[in-house]
Image (cartoon, rainbow, N blue to C red; front, top):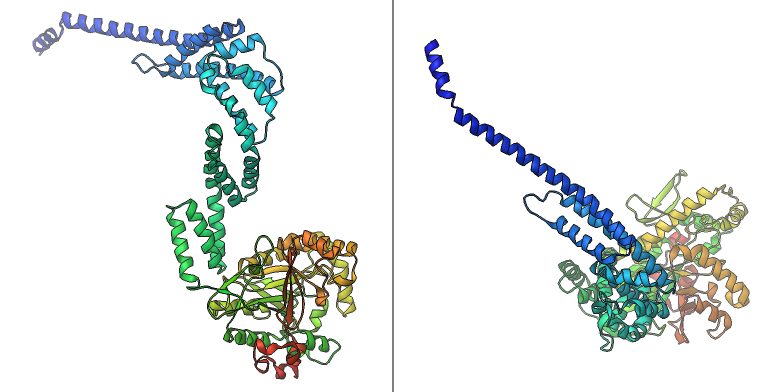
Length: 622
């Protein structure tokens, strides 16, 4: 065994191989040391190059600084086998650019202040070549943009260009811009208006103005480039909000309005399949044929409905008021059926006039007659609790607006059919051709006591409690937190109503006799309504004169009301009266209630329905 071992060792102990292995290991070690040393020294150079750059800048050797910058850039972009310090050189490049940017920013601030640059500053701006040119050229173009947008005065613009535009490294990119200053000035008013509209979310006016600028053959070059950029930005910003609005219209049954909105959008986004699909849905749910209508436009008005006839007609001191001024829920349902059978169709009151407050032609399905329904005083004053009405409105679990009132056992009942809102919503759902574009009616509110039975402002609480006490009921103790919660609840109800086809109007804040009030009283009442009620409903265009006591359109009081956004002014009458005046339209509403049903010939109600089929003698004579 020893012999064999000896022979084995002898066979593997080759001195030549051992020497070669040692040499190879030494070479690898030396190579590693050399590469490591090279990389180390290279890393040191990346630090030193920043120091050299800083020194060159401090000594105004801007040409040397540029050379150092270019060397650092080259190293940062190198990709050879020994190029392992790109990150360090990229950091060096960033540090050089940061130093330069700081110096250039100080110069830019001087120019914006109307100051003159020093010889050294101009040398820096020019001799730094591409290192300064890119930033300064972009800055000068930004000044042009600011001037076009109305954010910079022309003298500042001209001063900056007079000092920088002739520099060798800037001349080629910005020397032609001063020749465009007059075009910038010419386009400025429309561009400012368009940008203001865009910022306010008025997308279509903004888009139209941008298109006008883009189509002006005299506004070429920089103006046109910026206009095209604004058009692109406008399109980006407008798409989601406008599509959301169209979908909301569709959800509320307003397919005609959504159809118009989507058609306008497709003109801007012709290849958008989402818009095309939504438009097809609108087409399927819109009237197949519309024709110009030239006949009378009828307005009917009702008060909150009587949901409990036994309480309303119990012979107490409130019974006469209930009998004369209101309908029962059953009578309202019967009236709808009669109106539908007689080919009436509900329309929004806003359909009868255009943006210039002038009458416009209605388009209706053939053989239909237009009808505007107004519910006045849907506030639920304290006295309503004595006349068989609901006590307030509320939202049920499904988010639908319901009447709320106490049951026989005192528990509060949510009843979808306890008020005209729910009854009409259900009727239109069953008979969609009774409504043009999802129209329901107009709810006309005061601000006195409450809104929908809810105290929504501290200013209402004293009047509310006095009314409760005067009618033998306990006052309400409410904190600011309670009132804020009520206001939020009222807002939720209003939002739901607006989304389901209902409009809003004013019956003045205090249900005042407008004709007998002076201008100061009208102004105070209107401002109060706008502050407390209009802030919830949003802008309204219809004013219902309480008890029909109207003011002539030329009266200074009416002029004031027109200035507050009111267009449609409504009184009370027995016929379909409509008069178009100067920037306003006056109409008469025909009231439907117990008194007019009993005097139907005087109020000519038979043109609407069979009065005998509506009047509920059994309910009114329990």
